[in-house]
Length: 214
Image (cartoon, rainbow, N blue to C red; front, side, top):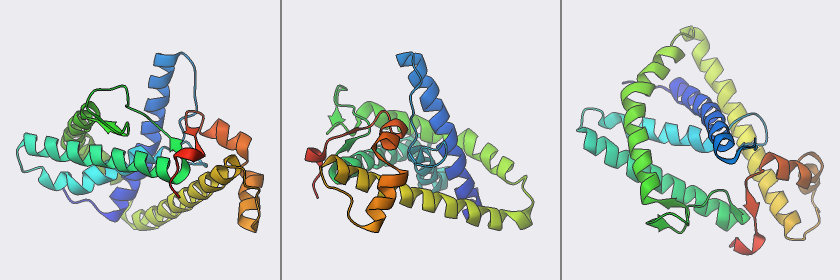
C-alpha cells in the first residue's frame, strides 16, 4: 500500500488524538476519575500514539506480503524499542517517569516489558491489516489538490507544538530543580507554561530532577 507524506501526517494527527481519547477513557474506567493524559502543551494530542503509528506504518507495512508472524515480531520489536527509548529519554533528560512497567515481569528498566512488546506486535498486525487501509481511504476523501497544503499546515502545527512542549518541559525541569528563569525564553515559558499549568496538563507525570542525567 502506497503511503505518502500526506497520509503520514494524517496518521500522526489522528492517532495522537484517538490514542489520547482511548487512554483517557481506559484510565477513567480503571481509576474512576478523569485525568489529563495530554502529551503536548497545545491540543488534545498524545504524540506517543501518533509517532508509534507512523513508525509501524513506515517499517511494518512494507512487510505485509510476509507471514503474519514476521509482521508480528517486527511490530513487537519496534514498539518495545520505541517505548523504551521514549521512556529513557524523558527520564534522563527531564527526570520524568511518564509511565512505568516496573511491576510487570520481564520489564526493561520499567520503560517497557515483554507483555507490552507483545501487545505492540498484535496492534501492529491489526493496524497494517485492517486499520491502515481504512485510514488511507478516509484520508483520500480529501480532494487531491488540498492534500499537500493541508499536510504542510498540520505538520507545521505538530512541529511547533512539539518544540513548545520540549521547551516547556525543559524550563519546568529547571524550575523544579531550583533554578530561577533567567533568559527571555525561560521567562516566556515561566509566564505561559508555569508550574501550575504543567502540573495540570501533565497530571500523570512525575518529575524528579535527581533522575536526570544532564
